Length: 119
Length: 108
Image (spheres, rainbow over the protein chains, first blue to last red):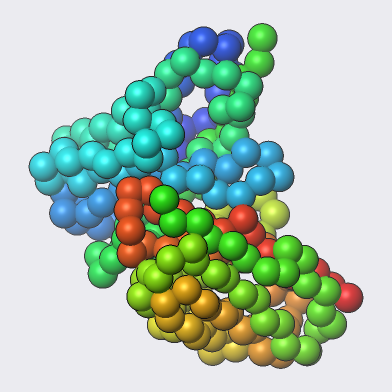
């Protein structure tokens, strides 16, 4: 049973950074790919990027490439997403997700972490 | 970047009826399309991948079809738990994975 358990809600000031964690279990961590997807209040889904822990390969959406970093800790099977230079437009629920083995879609999702950016 | 466009934005359907949702890609994505369901306050759930293959545990009243640029999600015999927002996602060309803007199925 795959489980993705994310860290709790955060409130951040504009210009600061946030780092969200995702503790994973129930799967072959290093051979799996994990994505991060966000959802602003009342809006749709937006993909930020992904990581494959076996070789720490990352891919990012061009929109976020300059200020997002996705990392993985193999010893704790935890994935992290750090977003810097926050603005109010970054207020959203951030989801950790596991990519399917058969393709680049998502078959398991974390519970989401609300990040609020406010002065 | 591939743009995914869903229609209609909102569909009002009575329980027990059929709902049909559409997703169009700005260029051909083959059959590399997934559908997700999202209920309020919850994470999305995978329904369909490969345009027409139901994910594990998904009820057979959900079906997907299409290829290239035009795709359809059909929910036959709508049940109360099916009223939600549905998203399509292409995974032919990435990064980025791109989603449609969502389509809400509401009770008529």
